[in-house]
Length: 322
Image (cartoon, rainbow, N blue to C red; front, side, top):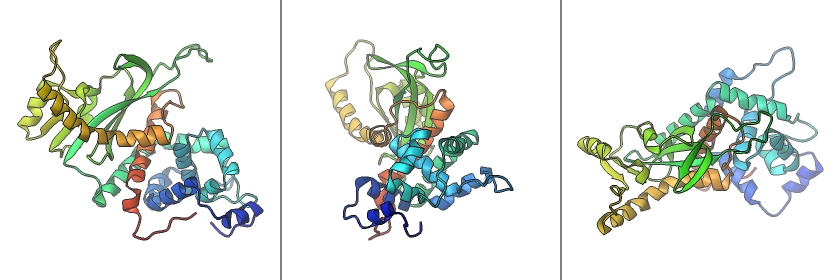
């Protein structure tokens, strides 16, 4: 972005403190492969014609990413551009000179990504980047799942709950919503992602979470299956899934110790969930139906992968500023 001309921009440029938000946006700006991602979307993006000119593709993609990081609705994203100088600098908007995208424009861009399955391509492109950089480990996979809650109330226009969301149990508690199933490497980077309603059993998604080159597999007791253990070990893959008890017979102390050792490795699969749910607030669905929320999940976990290894992707001695 060019030199700031507004009083707010001039004051911001001379401030003495770099805020956490500013530092975060600058680091993500430096590690996101903008050229590669824009190349995926450009064939589907409206071309300039004689009518109203479309806003810049990169600007819209940046706004879409800001929505993921700060858990913003389409109107909330528009307001954030007006409210925050650091977000304006990241997006590339100068008040008084540039047209600020309104909520309808932001919504249409999000729908374009959803319609053409572009968030899955973004996830795959970032996974490819991490493989090229040698940051994605292929020796083992950790399988896990988390529930994203959906409103269970029927006090809405249709008078019923979202029919694509289901009830699922975690422990002894029931939750209504969807499940995000992930396959991660032993650093916690997500290489595979499946989204279902919350009623689907974790173990049924296991095969879709493997990349096929594993030498070992980790998972909690929900993934234990004796026939799977025999099958994987016959193929030379170490089955490190936590063993569950048989019927009412308790686990031996030996197997409890083995499970604890395996859980220390398995816990690394929670790193992506921590970023997406705790840091970025994706604990509840924002949209009705699985498709829109599925698109959001692919984007969020792709960006979480970059966030987790951002310091490894930054050039040595790089200074990130907006």
